[in-house]
Length: 273
Image (tube, rainbow, N blue to C red; front, top):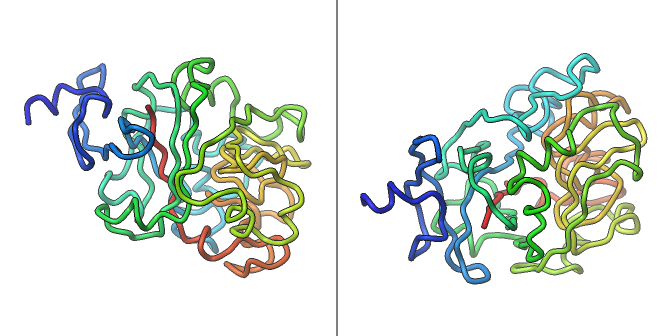
């Protein structure tokens, strides 16, 4: 147990499961270590969980705004680029989660899991509808973690334009699912305007609203993205929330521009290695 307390990330662990890690500032925290994906050593640092698709930037939308769509709060909560922590690792599919590793660990790559809400930790791997990871060490060019990447590419309304000012799009390797299954997680109108097989960071739409991560796709639209800034002008507040515009044509309908219920009701878990 003492050895676990001295570890700074999961690269030193031997098996899958919960561990206690310690940050460079001496903060002890519990998280989940994935020792099976692509050789293991992955540290869970955060999860994005949409607690209420009908809320539209209300309490619980920690990764966008909890105070509505407001041009006077262009950063929203600013969670992607601050050191506020919340939640617990064990409950990462039932609520938002962010631990000190998000901003403390110096990493090279990310792994992303889409796990059905309220799944028990022991079943996360097998329950996942989509899992993928990067292999090109892209974080080394952006400060070693997502905090530094999003300081470089702020998730802030109004500071950029569609396509021109998007952040990096990084190729991924699928661990569960593939490009074809990714297509069908999103609405039929959407499938012609994204390219599966990437994770895209910091995307602007035509109204200059900023989104944080477009999971498993390269795109310039918000219909596939999670997290964001504090203002979404089009049909406000319809787009606002941690899962922006997933329900544009109805909750979980998987018609027109709406995402499937499967992807809408899955938490997004973020890992570093």
